[in-house]
Image (cartoon, rainbow, N blue to C red; front, side, top):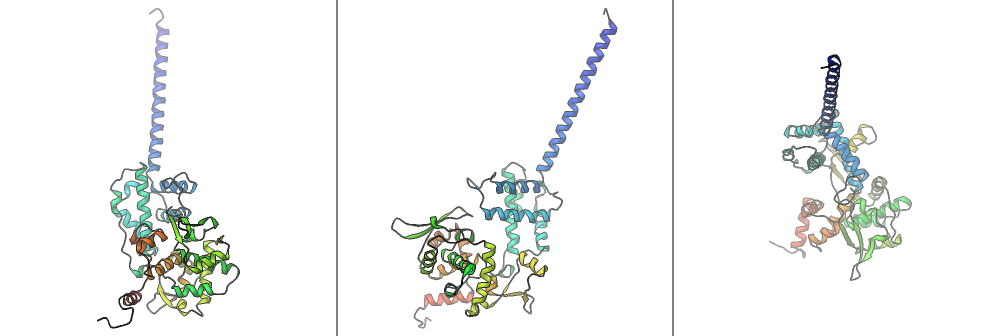
Length: 379
């Protein structure tokens, strides 16, 4: 009252300070809202989670249960990431967009790029898995997304041929005179055939893997890298025992790319004395083979129907060893499915039976041999 001008100036300054603070709070709130919206927008994008997921499993920041992801699994996820990057080039798809139309679009993209049905199913499973991982991590709440994924039915003509090498062919390979790197490749490949393991396991057998059971049975003990299953493989095959003795039970390791290339050349040379290896079969080209053809690095033959045809030796890969071992073990009819699965490490009978690669003729011959071992008239 005594000094109204001073009082008015003080009140004005107070109002201005309050307005300034309110404006600062509004700006701060807007900034926080924009940041949150930006974070939410980034979290909503499928690509960002997938990219982060791949880096985490590679570094070990994300574990598979209590263990690090196997190198082969990491490689497979990076392969899926590369495919998804091509599908979603602008990285615009979000979790809320995962519906039937989205899955259809993803399948159409793979069909357009000539992926085999088996590969389409594999990548579809990967996409479903990443959607589920993000849901479990609380990244999205699209709880209906999982119901839109269903694999295609695979016919034999939809995939590359999966062959196995017979016992006679394996014996001829074992007896084949070789030296140097070819000798090592042949031996390691045969170890895969005689142990029924994946290349990541049979190519990594060392002295520490050899042990005996309580009853003294010599075995190879492995913890499979892909599944973390422990398997114990009896060393029954004399060729396997001889190969182990040859290297004093300290088997060499060969890079799988080298093994893949060398074994084809070895079997091609062997086909001159073992004609079944040179038998022409119908197959499909993998994406890698298609790229080689496109780049002029691979020449393929086709039959009058336009189908790709190759000699059997050209269809052999590192995984043929596992398939050959399982099929030949099955053909002995000495072991139960459960016993064979303990050796191969399969968890389900369905997956195990997918490795039995017999033609209709072979199955018919097998039934006849079981039903009529003496050759007498049955009917």
